[in-house]
Image 1 (cartoon, one colour):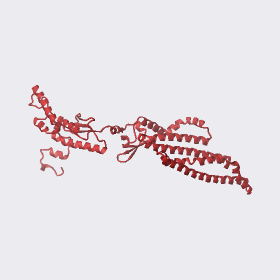
Image 2 (cartoon, rainbow, N blue to C red):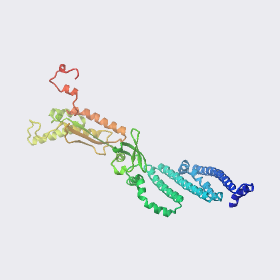
Image 3 (cartoon, helix red, strand yellow):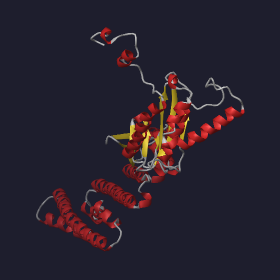
Image 4 (tube, rainbow, N blue to C red):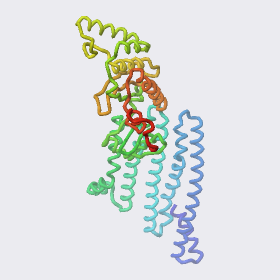
Length: 428
């Protein structure tokens, strides 16, 4: 090879050119020839590899090879042969310029490191896209794992590049690197924290892609669409995207609705506030009127009989309703609500159903409905809950109960019996 490289040099000298000029022209012409040769070889290699991969992908049942083509793996691999040829030829091209040969050789080796990293990157992206097509891995943070491998690859590439530039053996370079580890930890603090958080999130199965999470600190309320090494992307229900630091998932509190999604229903937990002044014992006439409500007819008949027997056996003086045992309108109302919820077609009967009275407040007595809708889809859930409470709100009047609401000007006009309509001012 050395003889072929000197043929042009000897020919130039025979033309009467000086030694320096011959050496310069020899090197320049050989460089141009090498560039043309490398470009042709690279073009041919790329075409051959692309055809081979394409034919193999057409016959293969898996889509892994298709993804390799999409991520340009064959294109990256095609640069290897021209690079190897260049490294072999460079010493003969710059035979008269050892210093320049050393610089070009280092440049090509640096390009080799970058090319290797590029091939690794293309392969990792291929694995990422392939894993996301597998049903068992669709909800896993594949992006985080790929980014971790890519970070280690870049670190190795940077170390090799610096060792090559400084002509330092790798083991010595790593020894010097240990002394600067504190600085590196400070520089890559967020990356390291994100890496640790990604592992914990994955191992503890805290969040999966597709989970509905609520993170009030960051204003996130929607589905997780991406989990990276440093961030988690949440698509909110208004289609905005919220980016959350991955480390926040293990350092702060958030709500994951996966348990609700995997359960048999979505919880309904809402209370009515009953005015205390509307609560009273039921007169016999009122009980007879309430027996017309079919859901509680049997209950009232049996309950009334039990109460009458108890009061009779104990000689209770019923001139005052407070004596002995009695029915109250709010107690019968709670029983009615319980029967109504149990008979509602959209409520999951296999999960807890409860109507309870909470502690009195300054507004009144809260009566809470606790149940689970069978349909967990948001819009259907809201419709079911509204349907239930439409009925419940309208039913309170049948039990002579009043719901609490803040007074308005309209209420004040009605509840002031001493003031005749003519006494109201025009502004009222």
